[in-house]
Structure formats: structure tokens, C-alpha cells
Image (cartoon, rainbow, N blue to C red; front, side, top):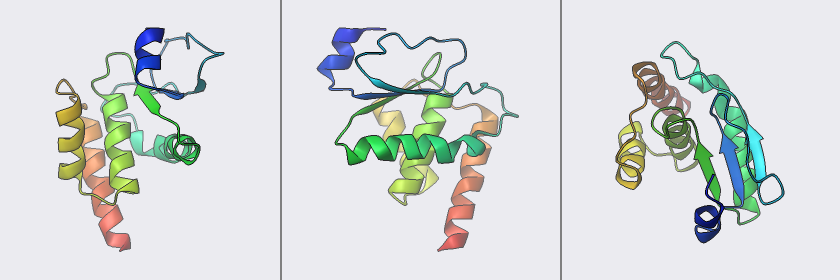
Length: 127
């Protein structure tokens, strides 16, 4: 909810994967909101296609995407890690390290971590 910071970082698109967080600046950004529960049993992989499509569409317009959840620790991190694994064809370990270096506080819940590892195995199987 800090317009100056968002503008400073040239954010154009916001992917809101929080629960109960309203989008604040509807006239300033392109939003996509998906309520994802931060629970180990939540199937985070099922949200990947629509999240990745939104991020890709923004990238095609030279946009900058902020992915956020309630605390910026679990859901948003899992989405960004999955996106990097998918778009950059990188391993879970590499994608996790990139995101962790950018935001040291990330800590996807245990279920999301397991699903991301499984997602990597599925990606490798398709090659």
C-alpha cells in the first residue's frame, strides 16, 4: 500500500495472491487477484497456469510485476519460485536461491516446498 515505492520500482502489474487484501490503486496498476490459502495442503501448483500467464502478459508489455501475499513469505515466494523454474527452466534450488537472495525472509510452507520439488521432477520428466 505504498504508492511511492511501487512507482519508484516501476511496478506496472500486481499479482495479489493474499487472502482479504484489497487492491489499493486500481487506476495505477493492472491487477490480478487470486485468494490462495497459506496452508501446506493447498495445491499451489493448480494456481501456476493463471499466475504465470499474468506475469508473462506483463513481461510482453515490458511491465514490472509485484507478486504479493499477506506477509510476502510463503505464497508469493512459491509463485515466483515456480515461475522462475518454468520460464527460466531452472532447478528448484537455483530458483529458491535467487528469490531468497532478493528477499531473505521468504519461507514457503512445507507443503509448498514439497510441491515445488515435485514440480521440478515433473518439468525434468518432460524434457
